[in-house]
Length: 299
Image 1 (tube, rainbow, N blue to C red):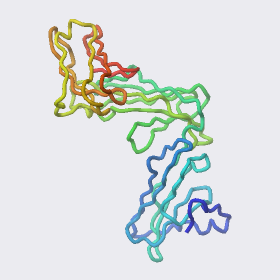
Image 2: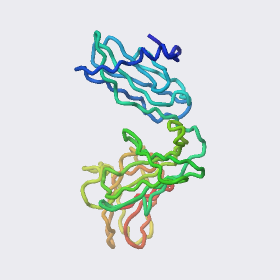
Image 3: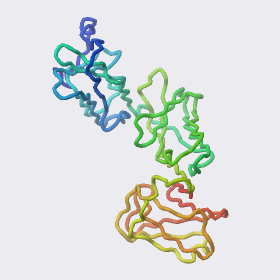
Image 4: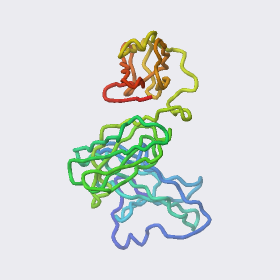
């Protein structure tokens, strides 16, 4: 059994001891990185191989490196470039080896300090069924880009052009709402990525279905805005405690003259603390849009 500090760098002799490719009835194990497979430099990550109870032996290896250990967990206290790469694992019961797990790509981020920019065309506020393109752009000549949605299992990769890549969404649904970031990197070093772009909040608007961020039952604490249509802007003061960042608001699609608004709790960009204000700007189209520190929420 080899701990983290004794991770083996094998010669050709050791390579013969790598995971045998034996098909059988044993289920393949799962392999995951916690808290995630995109790991900023100098932060910790744990790679965990999970098989059925009672497995006799685990084998966790880094592909194309000759590095492996006979333990199911690899803890990396501070991410370095040398740990980035492709991993897989297997386990042994008696004389039989399981099939290998799916491959895990462990990526070191922040290797290149200059982060790309991420934009949405034509707008980060889109209606269901329409098209939006997320464009990742770099100042430098990287030939690979990756788009990551917060909470997704894996990033989406693209290599359309040097300096930028487009990630089109041809038919937007509520499921596309969320926070996106992008990265740039070189195809020659596929596991070493730039720092992430600033976050982009994609908001799906409209009345087609119930958006994931619209609470089915509004919270008990609401704020009213009488005579809202007489003003070009309105201010919301949160007089309660800090607001959950996932509690977004529901507004009608248009604001009629003399209509009052009741807004459920709103948190942008992360939370709205006691006494902070939010300005609602009513454009000429009368479509309400909430704006806070560069975040736009269109309805």
